Amino acid sequence: MPAASSVNLNRLAAFAAVVESGSFTAAAEKLGLTKAMVSQHVSRLEKELGTSLLTRTTRRVAPTEAGSAFYADCAQALNGLEAAVARVGGDAELPTGTLRLTAAEDYGAAVVVPAIAGFMSKYPAMKVELVTTDQVVDLVSGRFDLAIRTGWLRDSSLRATRLGDFDQIVAAAPAYLKKFGTPRRPADLAKHRWIAITVLRNALTWTFTSKDAKTQTVRVSAALSTNSTASLRAFMREGAGISTLPSYMLDADIRAGRLVRLLPNWTLPQGGVHAVYPNARYTSAKVRAFVDFLRNSLLSEKVKDQR
Image (cartoon, rainbow, N blue to C red; front, side):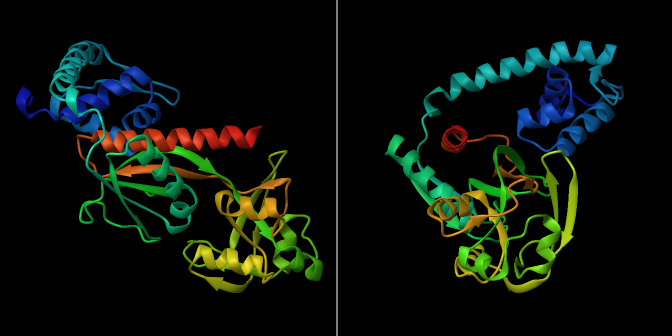
């Protein structure tokens, strides 16, 4: 058994979160970690202690007898640490300094920039440095406090919190539809001029789901391809072909009639919006404040759209 001073506090926090949440998935969401990372913390803790702390079933995770006793002591210790941190850091709750963050170019311009403007209006003493790039940058070497990433995250040692989601929309310009016709079902897309975005792993294969939960996978053929979502939208608006982009990029064009949403009875998988942090134990007040502000902004926009 390890000495008390050598026990990793992150593992204690992960174990306590699993007991309190009843599952690794819920604990991961609570802690802003991946499910795999939480499971790894608990497994290593059990190995260090030389005893099984949790009983795992397909439906629920529950503490063993030893786990229940250990959790009682563990929770008391963690609560004491939180109180100590609160006493020491009480004056550091207001966001200060410079927030350095990165986001994809399309999402940065459409969503993150307006959120930053509102954030700085609320906290005028803050400074913000935004770097937009479609490349996945190293947060540590790039000295970033935070990344806002969209889509589907790969397993990572970084901490991630899901802030919201977005729809993928298939659309085309009225001029294109007048010339080539309107697809009525996903299979029809194979006969049309598709504009591919090359940064996607599977840029030519798309799986749609109908309102009655039926799926249909279609393989399209690229008449045009580009590595830029901005160029892709421009091609679509020029009537060069059909493609799909996130709703936050196309909503304004669809409302203005520059593009037409296609296949309204079918949907593509939703993408996620995540706040991603370097895997540090401490999250600064400025990062917490901006993440909360962006989450509330996304929620407000979603409520508006549902009205």
